[in-house]
Length: 293
Figure (cartoon, rainbow, N blue to C red):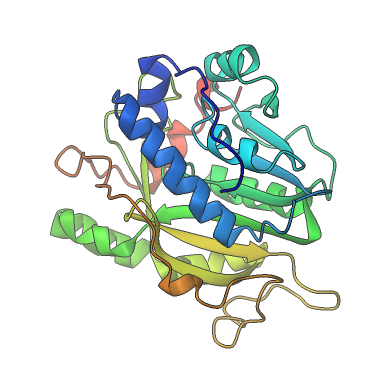
């Protein structure tokens, strides 16, 4: 990242916990740096970034933007999150770094169509149920510009093996599984743990946007990056058509698959606490008011 690091206020421990499952300020900082570096590589940030408009969806208390924005001051940065307390803290302490939005859990988002060159969503689809995800994918396809890209993190399938064999079998059968992990204080009850298979992503998510790349364990050694873009003019988004020989994104570094990403992570440290509830229960959770406000 370019630029000189700024001394910025540290969010309260409760807000740090919501985005990193840790109250350790050093871990909060190091994870922010690691994610920011990954976004720089995968997001195609170019030259000075002048004219770009970028959104951190699920920004929490600014873990990533506090590291990205100072190095790219000419980019129009935005952060959005349904956690009103986190957004209020950002407005008070990080107001000059980005435009902060208190969003609803459920789409639509309060942005015009074709609003952003880059939207990144880290550690969000790893927690919310399928009906929310499908609605949000349609919304992301609406707000990203035709030549833009979307980056979403998902738990690496290599982590599934720490789960009970019954749960592993359900993931393979269903392709997606929303599991109760006890929840996170201050967030909606639908905010649990969600796991995906690669086949599910290719077959389902590519109905909304072209999947251009899967980058294994791109985020803190535990979450893959799914890099997506709107189909080119005249194309249709059809399943796994682009899985091999995919068109490269503009300025996408060819060596990114071999890049060294820092940090390590576990499946939220809760592999023994995860409770298989089934898709009907997971969908039922989505009806709670605290996940639709």
